[in-house]
Length: 613
Image (tube, rainbow, N blue to C red; front, top):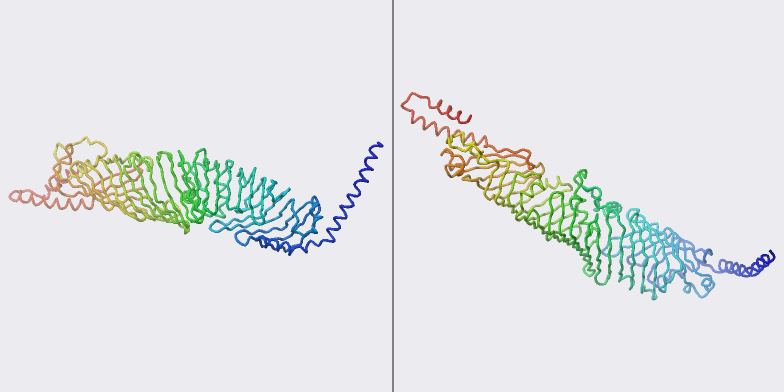
């Protein structure tokens, strides 16, 4: 007990001078040094370093846990692209530094910095403006000589989304120039998204390189958070609800603002891996993005049935690089296979250029349905209603595969070749279909139509005018046609076939028609002409009055094949029957002029019997 008492007494005696000196130092600094008198010095020193600093509040001494200065209501700007402010800026130093303050404030060396309720605006030329609010920052063991020190910060941006930063930083300054900056063990959090890695910068940030990777995150949620800043990024409603909810990115990059920047990475989308290569040419303000991969399950990302037909989500993945870059942009995509629910596209390649929200598809090539698709296009998104122009070319498309997959119909087969030039606008699929205008031509090689036997239909119509007893009765289903060629125009949601021609057997068929793209129906008018006595080698014989004469037909149905019929045009057929009746009446008048018979009665009885048969 005696020893403890002596120890306490010794400590009290020994510490008393230290405490006294500390108290004297605090009193000296507080009452002798007028810190507010240094406002102009601080602002002058900042201007010498190329910064505009304005201090509207007071400078106040603080002594715990370290001596320092608290500056209220301060703002700063680099006179070019960066400006900031803080409700409170606390600069701390060591006691030895503070006691040497008589040498001038320029000799003061900081050991820590704390920012309370700060703001930062960054508006570089030709790039999107970034703004951070409610910045809270703290650091200790601060060094500007290249030594590492920890830093923690938080802020809000992009519609109030919260950022959190933790890293070990090293900064080396040479006068007013930053020779080197490095961030090690970097962790940046934006809501549920985590970004990890390291980076280094030199030459005042003109050259930056590093490696970064993310955790798995939900892209739909991210797009919703960014939408206040980029309205184009409307989160899509996908056919598979979980699509676009499991993404991650890993990249290495080099940023050189005096030349070119390069980003090489790997993107994982719902388990699908894509290589991404991004190059920025700063001399011409150009962004080039290359994307390649083996498989894309595109069917998962089609619009959901409850999406109200809004097509903005369809363009969002393509538009992201163009929306975030205000210069010229290029996106090149190369995919081995694109899978939909009922078919796949092989060897897909596209090249899109963009500038000022105008996208130009300069090349699209793909193998599909055993044929090939090529296209160029333009998409203008500068107004609230996007407009587009499209010039596709189809070659050797197998309709036996295409129609069941695209229209749920197997009625038509053949190999399709087509060239189209079409324009339109709209925010929904229905609106775009109704706005379509343009023209094109098509060729269907070796076509067959399963829902109707055209030769049988012609023979049934010809029966009104008489047929031979050897006429065929066991007609096979469907029709095998010769090559079908035609031209068409697009207007108000309809595909107007202005002309087409084909043949089956000895029947030559030509006509016109309408396909309702919005209503999914069709109405085809056909004129069948027989230039022989029989429709085919196994067909029916036809009255000579119907030979070398055009017989009108009307065919109507739905594109899904749920209904279809083809019959003679009643109005035109009545005229044809009338003319035939007059011809036959004249013949009977000549034959029976010397007989007591009623030629009109015989004529109509004959026609009536044949019609009933």
